[in-house]
Length: 61
Image 1 (cartoon, rainbow, N blue to C red):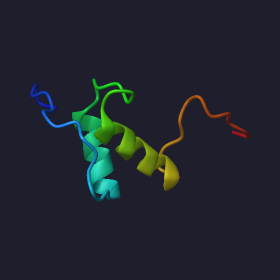
Image 2: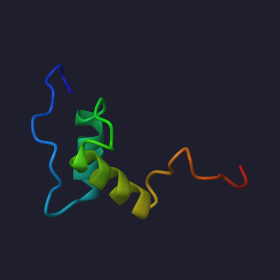
Image 3: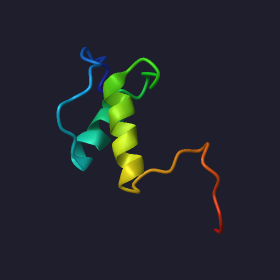
Image 4: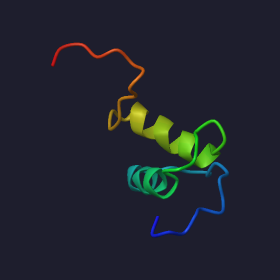
């Protein structure tokens, strides 16, 4: 974010919704297969219902 690439890609001991959103923004160019912190943030957001992965089928509108 802001032209500065993230340095640390390791998973964190705790996760919050605000932190997960920030990680998803700061690690936007990182693939989740390599970046443990982005994967952890994505799983958190999916678990709380704040994010729905595109590969998950959608029903209804």
